[in-house]
Image (cartoon, rainbow, N blue to C red):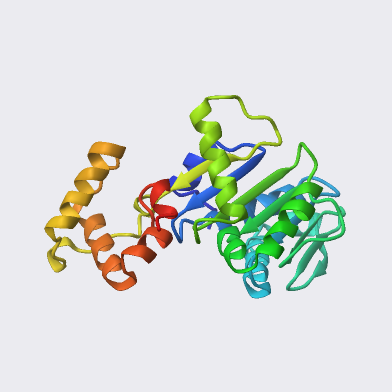
Length: 257
């Protein structure tokens, strides 16, 4: 089954930069998208090093597994032409010298591609680790390399919060970005087509109707009844604060305190 990008992935593909900060709702498929991009880069370019960093080793190796899943299902001719020389939970290395390495930090080679996942929770729970990722790992990527920092929000301070703030300031200023600047991208819960429930099973309270109308008027975010039903039921379970963090509608909601 060919990989087909969803709406959020297509939107991002037309706007990506050398260094990107992706502030998002959960389950929009960016980890899968980035894993496929890394696999593509390794298969068709020699001596390409890709690093994956996540808050736990299990989370990082799960992203390696996404790339391996795709590799195993490629046509046999492609796999025979570019066989794996290292195949482990933490590393995939190809016959052309390219590799994908996963962990909770990255040390060693200079990565041409770097994926830092859940930098928000890392920044909140482990500030020293977050600073090491910033000063050590991110700085090791060459000027023409590719960096994805993608995360849900966590807290109103820390390295990820600073990255988001810097991106908002650049966007507001209208200045052109250099290759060292991080471009900010935001993807809300309404971009996930799975976030829908039958409207006839859910009561939409008046305050929620006002909220959805405010999204439409102030932000141009139009939602239908099934999306609103999903939001109301998910908010009932998570509570207002966690809903803003895990499934934000606007960038401002992500760091609401």
